[in-house]
Image (cartoon, rainbow, N blue to C red; front, side):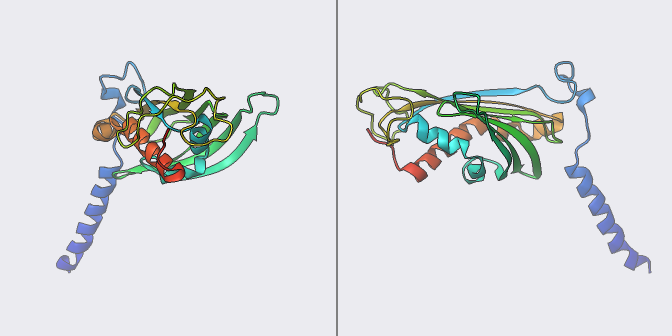
Length: 228
């Protein structure tokens, strides 16, 4: 009888160990950064800039399509628009959305609601509506600005862009290459638990560069290689 009990004890012990392994304790009070952020690690801030051979309109429309995020954003495994509201009184046509996003990496998986503000052809800002067990804060801002046609594209597979006449933001017809665009990405996030920050520092330290690269690949997939 005692031998028959052993497998059950082993399974139970394994289950308890697994739960303890993936549910990390709150060690915020022991963090050297607890004075800066009482509930977790200090925010990590990243900034990326790159010239794309596409119009503001083209680039904006890709980022404003929140439901497409799982197709190209690293670690985003799900996106669902809960509600959408266009500000009728705003001449810029600003739109706000509540989007439920799911992120997953390693053994972590989190769903949270993000408030997304879209300003046509100018910017898309996503702010986590509330803290989650994984993130205390998570803010992302994409901005799109006209760039000089004489500016060389930093990606070798695209040829340098020839000088073109100045066009309105987004271009009249949205043709790729008719008006290059400077894309800037500002990313700020803070983990709710210092242990999560320590485990994830190597991966998330490169996430902004991964996002720009993934976005560039998405542009090529949708619009084709940008040319002059």
